[in-house]
Image (cartoon, rainbow, N blue to C red; front, side, top):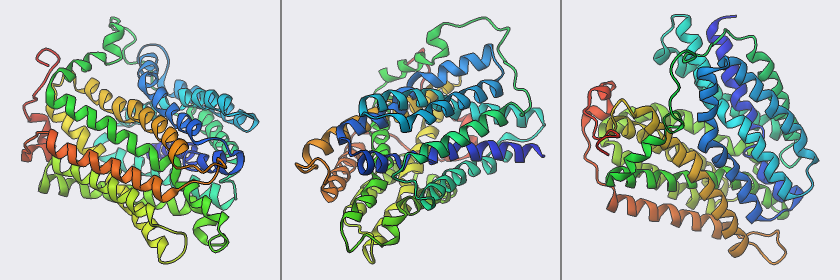
Length: 431
């Protein structure tokens, strides 16, 4: 089996695990368990909590003590064990802690999968820049296939979705031990302080007004990302209470409809270089915020039948721009504004703001708001149009504030491969 094929299988299974339950857990929570919206918000915050420090801690272990592929496999096997216990949980409080434990094991594997892939490709004399992206695309395909599998098997509202994810986690965990060895690369180097290895020195960048503004918007956009991941699938499921919609394809297989978002994500990645060259980083990030307004606004008026389903599909297509344009252009902004000595830490801070603090904020606050203002007295019926319009208003306010507060002048070099030679604005010393 070729190296590229082996890493393609790794990438596919990595995101198949996540796709098996991430989008459909809301249907299980609301439709089957009928637990509260406020408590559900806390469930999605577990990804953010686990993302804040666990990837850095596991990275230290892989750098100094344990082969990366072995650590990667162990984490997936432990995650699979936890996923098998999810169906046994009978109360939302315990459910939170179980999902948090699963996320503690899973979130570090996102970074480790990249580290393992890069290490194997380099050892085989292959070009990481050229050969890794086609491998990574199969991760998105794995996520989509998982959504379709769970949906077609009728597991969207069932605890069985967690068994599907667990099976994939066990398979990937065992498979990881067959990969080429990726030994610790910093085993004999002097130990650095915990502040250094966790990238906490990058917080000094927040003393600069422009960087502080950027990272605050990264946090706010990270919150927006969690909203459709958490509620998109259960939104369509709720239409099965209306006889006119009960037998529509979108209500029977909502995960398949929502998977259009992931397809769009892969396509919009290809458009980013053109938009960056033509409009610049700030404009592209603004396009992302406007796309979030459209994403939520279209869902507010969407229905499972024709022509309302076209609005849902358009919302899924717009998601690709909303997700990709800020994440990619944002990481490029960090790349061009920081010195090489702190660049990796600054990228970690960017991810911490979006997938860490942003995820916690979006998940927690949205759950409370939905429970308090958009849930009927029966504790089940929700005003979905009001929910989506509120989210759209939130994204619109962010976009307006971004235009007013974020000051950045576009330079053509930022959108090219020559970004390495752009003079960085900040280092830790002058932040």
